[in-house]
Length: 453
Image 1 (spheres, helix red, strand yellow):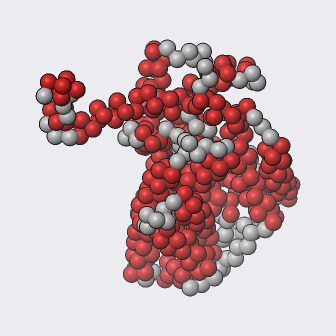
Image 2: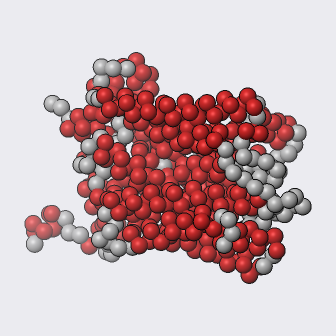
């Protein structure tokens, strides 16, 4: 007898149409454009970019911080939902976890772009580890991100194993591939117990790792005395921003998957509503941190800080700043605070606005400060060149390409977790409700008591 969940959730893997190959070709062309830009930069050096002295960070570091922030979408949020036993998570966790793993690699690649040559990455490790410069936040960043990549990859892979075994048994293509990755899974009780323990341990471990990663990224800025970077709240400010952009990315990915793969039965309006409420909370938190950051700078009235402050609010970076405020606060707040507009379309529009706004936030953090340095350099200027723009296009296309390929190799909705939810959810939820309510067994009478009565 055919299983309906397996039929629906495996259909994107089994059936591939002409549109898919055309889309892959389109993305491959964009990725090639990015690689062309990189090859040009490798041949002629960083002089072909808009980077200069004192603006040594530009689009590459903006994209690095942006992608690392997006990475909080999957692993961290998925882990929190698993630990809190939120049943509505089952259909969305995998699509979120994949985002984390892919963007971590792309974010790290942007560091290599900024260094100019890949071999210079070794200098960071060599000078840090072998020459004793372990106090450098750049070195901390290397280890934090490497740890996060490993943990997130394991956390993605573990819940995939039962579904890989299903594909091994159901799909005729790539059997050898699925046989290796399934690790001999046959679904017996012993394997299930071990898997459950492993996933629980990883869910607990990845939360502090994820928080530490973006905190360390913020310290790369905050440990300097550059104007408007040397801030004690940069750690939590970056973490909040990361979760903020991460939730927005999940919502956009869910909407696309739902539409393209016809997953309306699995990714429902309730998922968008719940994530929309979470996004609304993050809108308010983001506004609170941003307001606190700018208010303290304004009252401090330190001349170098004020030069950056005014360049963002009324200077040449004001358009970026105010579009950021509109995108990160006004648009999503208006849409998400009203139940009537917190629909699937509404949450997607709010999420697109947030993703745009958070990229602009990263840009306005990185560039205006370097243009107005504390050291006695002349005021700088930064205009990205075609090389940086090509590489930025290539990075975003690379992310989408890898995501699409993953969804054609593995179920983007966890089959076994959906089945488990159907079988156990009502019973487990009922037991939890009894624990919440006052009195023995939550004051709920058993069927036997009711019959006797």
